[in-house]
Image 1 (spheres, rainbow, N blue to C red):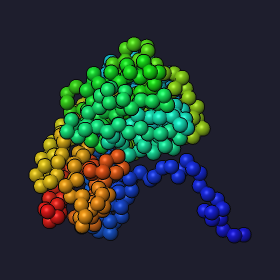
Image 2 (cartoon, one colour):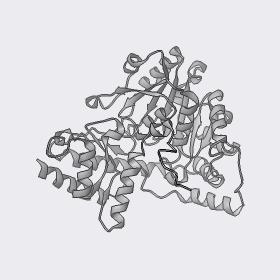
Image 3 (cartoon, rainbow, N blue to C red):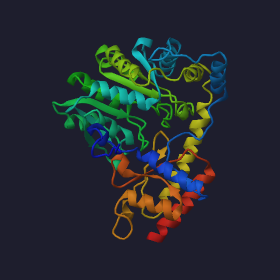
Image 4 (tube, rainbow, N blue to C red):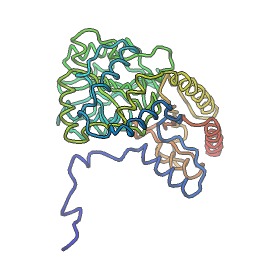
Length: 402
């Protein structure tokens, strides 16, 4: 029998709408070079460099030993959903119930499920730029159209209700917010976020608020739109997305959550029942321990991120031609490298990032993945030694180009 070919068995239109995650692609290439013995200063993948706290690991081990290894409800155990809502209420003043909550295999699955149940072919989604690499592809996969709203670097990449309202059309279905932001680290003003939710309520739209970095807010004004939404009309138009990955150094555990109107959560539960079903049972027990146990791991983490951020910004600004805003949260810097985008050097951030990896052994993610033709993203959760090594290599590389 003849072998199947791509011509006789074409892929679907929906899979051809999206690209492989640029972040993961760069991290994979850096790993390949590292396996060959190349010393890479790696700033590509966005994840904490801290170990998962011991009491969380102990809870997972105890769950395995207790044979807590069977299916759970699709949306997670009641115990986990109660822990999610209680933690959020204590920290942000929200008032969600377990039946308004779903747990999934990471915040990314929560977002994927949400867009699949809310956005149909021809629907538009307001997408502030720069944006996280997966937002654009998730919207396109479900047949939606991203309507990009450009933010201004000179204004700290801030987003206002007036900017969004100008972009609304009769086809708008969802307004997507992400604060603190990946990749810029920008933190929206709480009044701007609330104004956008009120706008959505008036126009019968849904706000999806990706707050996976809510605990990594360096402004001292930690905020969740879920806590600010006190009126039922506002709550009816808001889905809050969170994750344990960044807060508790649990990226590989894959546990995220969504909180919002029961009709949205129920639809997400239906979709999840036909895809992954429940998050891993033992991870759910670890999640309960994370949410209900000691929270004293957060303070030292945040303090270290601020120390690393300050050094990264200082070092980048010392490189001639590089501009870099001071991020207010998350753990990324998003330097402007447009001074080096020219004929004979690199025409695009992707070309420049390729040269940095090959010639200076520095791995970072080009701005195209985030909707920018001027920037690159540097993820700084790493050792200070690695920060210094990377800064030295970048300064040498860019100085030679000048």
